[in-house]
Length: 319
Ligand SMILES: Nc1ncnc2c1ncn2[C@@H]1O[C@H](COP(=O)(O)OP(=O)(O)OP(=O)(O)O)[C@@H](O)[C@H]1O
Ligand SMILES: N[C@@H](CCO)C(=O)O
Image (cartoon, rainbow, N blue to C red):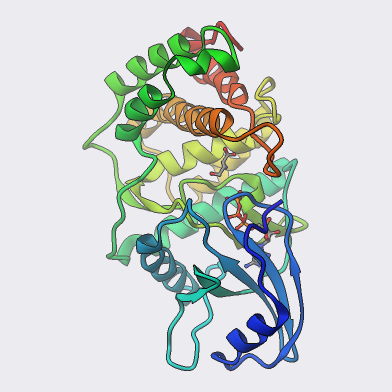
């Protein structure tokens, strides 16, 4: 459940007077999501999402995320920009948190995508990468390749509490991936970096919105596709690969950016890096979230299992 900070009706009604959006009719906390506090807000004119940014999103990064959303929206892509108040301000403060009122987007977030939906979503990512060709701001990837080793060290041998041998398996996978990581050769742009099925809203086979840009950063363009591939083309436990979904995703993407021979050759390494990134962030959360917390802990081993698909040599003993 993701409402960490409560906002009273009085405070919210006063907050909305900064905007030209009508008056408050209702507000409901949204249970999905784990990072921020989200509310569905109805006014006499429209509906909106109100997001209060909790500690995982740094206030200093919000201008980059909002500029990216504005840029994509201006190019006609389906993304939810922040609403500007009467003074043109998007990033506000509410109950001591940075907060934005955001355009409500139609659609339903996916849990089990079909190949047709994967085709559309892969194409939407390709469109997004086309649209950022002239987006100038940059943000370092706070979960990029150079952060994995320090995060592994911070987790340390406690990883073996999750599954015996996990530390050694992750260390071996990281050695392998770091040695092959393309540091300079591939195209780098603003990427989403977390385009899981739950961050794509769809109606039928049509993408109605890409959401949750709070890991967006400047990194290898095809790494974004590799993250998406790992998130979309496996069952939740990471045991079974769905080739039809995985191939459709890449086919959709290639409508905009055919993969080069070098990108194809490096895809398994990029996808293995993505597996390490999500295994590590999930493991860190696992070790640092009490089992009785309201937030659902996500299974790090589901990403260790995916590693074996991309690099059979890295098939995990613990998985
Ligand atoms: N602009 C929007 N329009 C309509 N619904 C939205 C919008 N933004 C978010 N939602 C809804 O709120 C839910 C939670 O949003 P979001 O995924 O951004 O939360 P979060 O706390 O950042 O979570 P996480 O990082 O865990 O995915 C989404 O699954 C979606 O149903
Ligand atoms: N999408 C991530 C969580 C948010 O980054 C995961 O499933 O581990």
